[in-house]
Image (tube, rainbow over all chains, first blue to last red; front, side, top):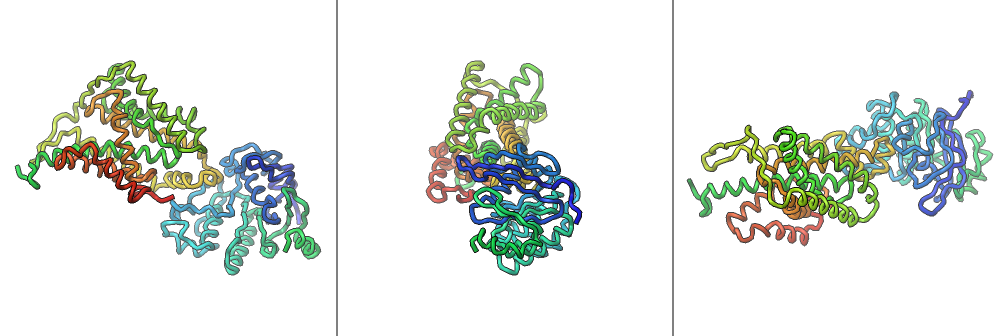
Length: 238
Length: 295
């Protein structure tokens, strides 16, 4: 495998605070172009905060977040999105006052190269059927998750931050989400995935980072997964 | 001439017309309040003063630049809207995370200052503003006489209200506004400059008030207290319609104008209080307002 000289996303010495509480202490990791990287960790380890810090939506953050070589740490979140990073939040963030189609078309296109609507409907056929629904939040949990992922594929963003996309979903839907992530990777998207569900992560990820108490404490690639399963169970407490 | 329920038709339709005129202003002003509250979470107590500023801007444009009603109808809202943008950047932007009370107090104080300054320079007697030549006169509809200017006010107000509703409920820009009302952080993380959108929304709401002020100038005269007299009723309208509901503001504005007019015909003693009685009943039965969403 030939690796790009600089990673697509380079996070260095990232620290973040919510009010007085210091959540991220020293987070360092890279995501390479075209790969699916996973942040694993227990509840409260700092996974979601790491994604939010990259996106610029936590209270205060320091350190360095470089995307395509550009420093983003001091940029407001709208500019970070315009640089080509898209975020799918854990709570999905479907808007109740918007219909399904309006939700899908909400994120503006930030650069060319996003998926067409037809392509999105190929990935998520259910969405096409529910397009006329007047309230995005009337969809089932699985459909809302598909909508939350589908809407950020249009924007042309190259890096997708997915926060626990399988949380609370039925196994058959989790499988569909896994299939989608692999399809997106084939189309050249780079994905940073936050997961508690290690079994799911193992079906899609190329690289694993383990986060604990706001620090990256371990990392390995997919080929080393077998050798690290014991350790992982220990980290995640499963 | 014929009678309806023992009332001469001309009196009935005359009051209906007055009701629709008042309703036009209630609707325009409560619409602006609803737009501002929805997006900024600010109860804009200076709305009446900004309406008055619109009327004064029209008056001053005529006095000092010779610009008549039609240019004023465009320029006055732009000027007053621009002052709104400045107010938002200087003051309001610091209040969004605080309780509603702070925004209410700040805008109330602002209203007192604006009114005080206006009274200082212009006194409290009303200044006349003539109906533009193209809208003078009227037509006899058979059952009543309809002054052209009043017909224009109703049509213009309806047009602005429906256009605003359309933009907010049916367009991409409106989807951004509605989404940002729900979750501004996420909308911003999609790449939309939400703070700028909020500033412009306030400017737009204030411009709506100024537009109403220009339209009111030929009907009610131009005076420093014209806004504070009206705004109390408008807040009752907003409470009845449901704070932040666009459609609620429009329907309730016109509806209450008509109800008030009809009360003048059938039970004149109650005409000044009917809106407040309705407000009290609505607050008891549906605290979120007729069109308001709970929570």
